[in-house]
Image (cartoon, rainbow, N blue to C red):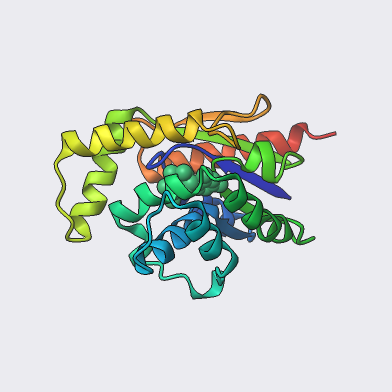
Length: 210
Ligand code: C5P
């Protein structure tokens, strides 16, 4: 079984993907971490994340096993990730890795922006997870506070809105709900409630499968 989970930043898709993978005993790939790792490598090299050559070199050199899971979560890396992710050559470079992961006969959970539309259009279940901009900004603000990166909530809200717009407006693999994806709005839901709602959708979709 392949489960594709897409949605904007701080929608809860990562936590839901983790919970769902545990529940159905599937492995999980956080594809945002790949773009974040490429962005971090560009920044660490002192290069500009809008420089296509630097971004492509970082994508080619990416070792998924060596991703620094803490450093990729900073606000600056998230913004740089959405810049490198808009480059077709970077996306093409990361495509095979994601498809290989999904091709495991044991099944997989993948979460990102274009899983249901580009990476795994044949996924058994597709979820589009979202929440209001204000709610997502509050969640991200709490996360950054906990990391010791205090941020102004209004500025963060504007930054997330700009990132959403960039992800949704780019010509390659824009963030969009696939026509056959189930919508899950996590505004006002706790993590447990959101994970339970995801399981209900997945179980229902599996029962309905021919
Ligand atoms: O999900 P996360 O916030 O970690 O993703 C960081 C950035 O990576 C996103 O803003 C998006 O631009 C990009 N991304 C993408 N396609 C994916 C996953 C993430 O373009 N499948």
